Length: 575
Image (cartoon, rainbow, N blue to C red; front, side):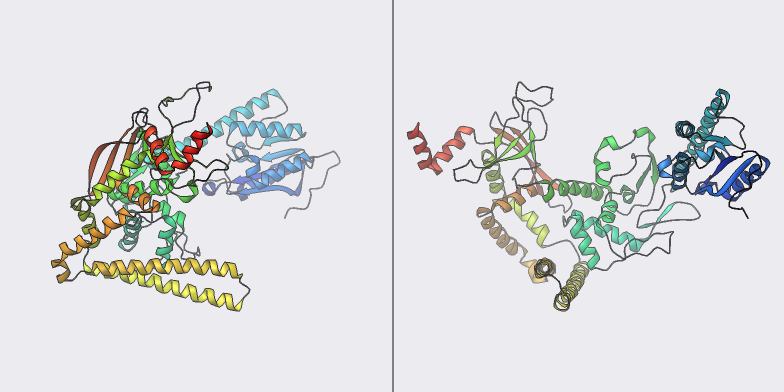
């Protein structure tokens, strides 16, 4: 047992502090804390030093590359050194203190300012003279080189294993397990079904991540659990961030990569931003059994990008052609803008599209065609909607889409399974409503909060009921199949009527459904438009390229005068 302090001898003794450190992977390499402590105590007894028990600083599981503030015990040591509670810091080896030369030298210099020395009992040097400082720098550099060598050796080993097809990047994704014999991934079919379902909900139902999370939780499917830490408790809940990581994990396509992305991996952003990827020559592909197709993964990536662009948090106004327009002159994306009505005038404001607002006197350069990226009012693009409307009125263009939607190529068993899942969600929602009512009656739940949550549940309930109704329509009898042409004609007639009386929101939905890209030549009053339509093949689309004349500013002014003649005549009289 160590006494509170070693008895001072007649001469003045130096007060020492001991710093012991071990990282997790060093416990079995002869650097254990007990080994370091025994060696240091034996050294103290052979020297003219005194030690107080509180000045033993023990750090377990911390890397030698971390700075002082990231190591609690080391931070406490420097605080006590500042208060001059000891005269010398003792360590077993230099790399126990720091494994980075810069941090080592800075810390020793800081101790010197406090009047505290530093000594390693296995590497002889004195920090108070020039020779000792040189030795400190040299040994610190050796310690850092040793760490870098270990890291390089580890990375080379992982790279070799990856080239052999072994899984080297930690915990395997949900849907896979590691074969202990081969160290390769194998598919867990029950989990793989859930992965496919998540992708289908995103791609084919176009649901945002929050809706996917809500639906998958209603189905009471077991959420991912840690494969190695068995004692970790979970709430069996599918979080949005978990689903987002799964829907951006290309491992599911059968093509995993080692050292492809810069860390940390940032889901969709890392997928679409080439600046977050390493050079291609650094990539090492790991072949794994696929769960989904590459085509489905690419569609999921496109849908996630659309969801991000069209998220309500990213836009205050709705625009018919937002995210679809490019400038035909400089090929840059055009942005949406809104000009509110002037004070004292009735109106709803003007929506327009623009490149970059710059004057000839502005400082700096831009690759945009400043003179051609002009503001273009949304009303000038009305001919694009008119063209799409005429196209959709043609039965040969709309009936394939209606047929695909109404007579899905799914067997009845598959549809019935989806109906069952929707009914389970409906039942779970009903239980939530009962609990909400009970809480409201028996506790002090605020009435406003109660009504808000009840309204949300009712909207969700109505949405699920509509889904069930649609799914029931997919189960077509033989007689219905005979009358398929008649059914489609009736549906097409309803679509025509809906298009003619379309609201702004209807137009917005239809345009983004059928328009892929618009290249606008505003100064020359025309636009190149790429339309996309479902083909007879269920998974492919056909494209139509049209050059459409848009309205000029004079034509827009003429339309305004016709629609509001009194206002313009009054204006002319005033002038």
